Image (cartoon, rainbow, N blue to C red; front, side):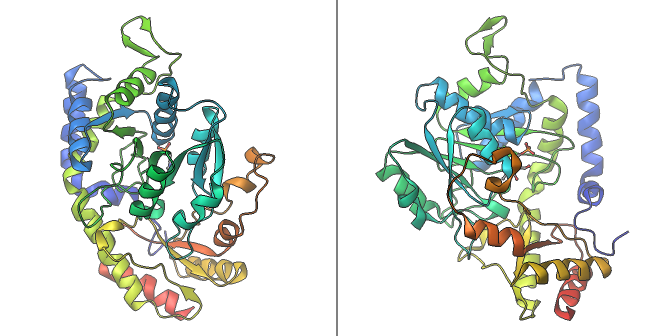
Length: 372
Ligand SMILES: Cc1ncc(COP(=O)(O)O)c(C=O)c1O
């Protein structure tokens, strides 16, 4: 057993054990398990928390991404073959969703200080068939939304958000991840800042037509039983996950605050010339530190650091070791060069980050990194 595990899900849920058990038993006793009272309540609560009109629960984050794009296609706002700008250093799900619905992902390199899509690179990536931007608030840090929204408006592009890692990240004026564009996708995968005890996802939007289309697409393409408007899929948020998420939502802000506290300590106390720390955003609320990613100067140094920390009982992961354009699944699809994404994949390392980490555990991690 690691001294400081990368993430301990049982410990993460332990503070809510009683309310989770109560929520689960209410669902069992209700006799209603899909699309019911808890789903509706959680949709309303999360929409309100994010400051949007509609939330539609779906099966997982990948489905949320896929269905929000498909809804836009069914409504005639996007057509097969249209290009969507996505970051080159994202988790594969973002790219999979775009290609799954017949759109073309075009990769945009990140800014090195924020790890997020670089707004200065949007212009060059834009072509005659570019119709949308799908930003990813990677690692929990909001993208440069003012610049990106302005660019999308100026160029008549649809704006979508992959908010799977950024539950509760907000600009100084209170605008929340998931509230900026046509629609946004959330994942509640168990490791996320707001995590279910299984798979769950959600689409957020202020657009009634998108909300209705996503709800219908996730229910076999049907609004009215046995009447099918679209060739839909089965992707619905079940009552059990909705009830568990509803029990955890009131604690999300305090968990994010604790993550920020740990991040601030890492940035203050890690003192090792071999380590490049992430830049803190000007407004602390913009980052919810889903993961805390440091960088080293070379792949060898990163691998050595990872080995060193493992030997000291400290869990680490790499988010992500292979960028989408180098995956076998996309072997013949991207002809461009993406040196920043490639360099990041070789040099990044995610160190322990969780709201239930103790101060001593944080000190342990800092001590080991400084000793390296
Ligand atoms: C950025 C990003 N997008 C999409 C997803 C997909 O979510 P899920 O695992 O719920 O399908 C994830 C997480 O797994 C993610 O990190």
